[in-house]
Figure 1 (cartoon, helix red, strand yellow):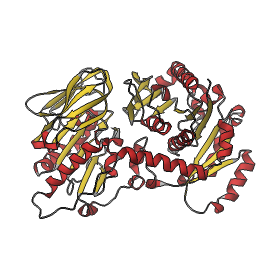
Figure 2 (spheres, rainbow, N blue to C red):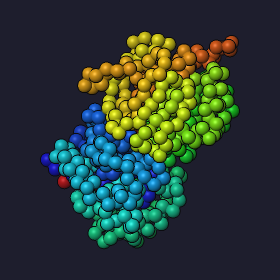
Figure 3 (cartoon, rainbow, N blue to C red):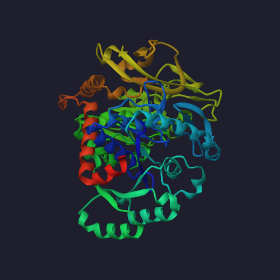
Length: 514
């Protein structure tokens, strides 16, 4: 079997490539086709661990769900995770290679291409259709000579390309025409259709422009996809989504907290990673979730979460400059709850040590001191899926959770504290993860995805509500918890329905067919 190929590229970043690939994957899966997603090279801080323990982009994990598949490293053979303004960790076939500057990585691309080619060939042998997602823009002509993710890939494998423009950003017609003008002749021949994404309004007002651009470029429009915002839920790919709270359905004014039974703040770290860990909280009734800048006041919140970070020591140093340690301790002493996940868990301890300068140029930095633990960075990165039993008695009994770990640090207890989880890895190895202090008000864990679990999330939010209600005569009744897995399924199906109505699927079928 050699799968057919269909590729989606964009006129720029954040034009909706990931979502449209996921929607098309779901459309073809519902038809009974064996379809798989593929992104040769992904630059993102939201990542996922496959059952084999390999690290890939979170967007490809969502696209795999759309296909009804377990995520696999071949769906994203090269992952780049920025850890500074000039460098990034390069991950090939799920494992870290090294930290590289942009210049060094540019020279490494021939090696990276071998991994890309091997992965795509394996997918084509197993599936009937592979839907490929590009990255950024194919018109980045300064990178053309070693491109492995846009037209450099498309021309090598002769993949038909649909080019997406984001009309919400403005200038969509100029973006489409400009992109075509900067492509080489053989590249332009592969562009088989245009898609306008994120349109608000009456499409008939757009039609004269579509006709003019189609005539000028000799490329038909495959469709106009309406803006769907928060009505259709998909996990976001990267931190750009947090720059516009309205896009994630987040309220903007702290005064709105009074109308909610629970108010939760996530500290928006400069190197925040895997913020989709907290998406399930967005959908809970009577819960308000805000992403706060580190200097923002904490007044009015019941819970503050420190998320993961790709540069934990540097982010913690910034928090110290902004006096967050003192303010967070005062918040906790006043009865507020504090949670740290992965890098946030490390920050909650007494110190972070990086003697090998693996993550930053800092050898050691003082932690927040809310948990009796210390963390030391190690050369080997831990990437594993795991299941666990909740051992913290304050959050309920017989709770079981599953998730994944991605971290360089090794955290050890320096004193006395109750463990949060008893973890069982896929190979059967067991160990304790996470610790609790102050009778449950402070805890941390390495487990990403712990809030995805409906039973744990419901139990923990119930505990928070009891804490929030203490000292008050009454509390707003908690609505039944949601099924986060079903919410994702509903989002994928709704997106597939929308694309089926918005796109010329007969034209796309011809491109994706034999």
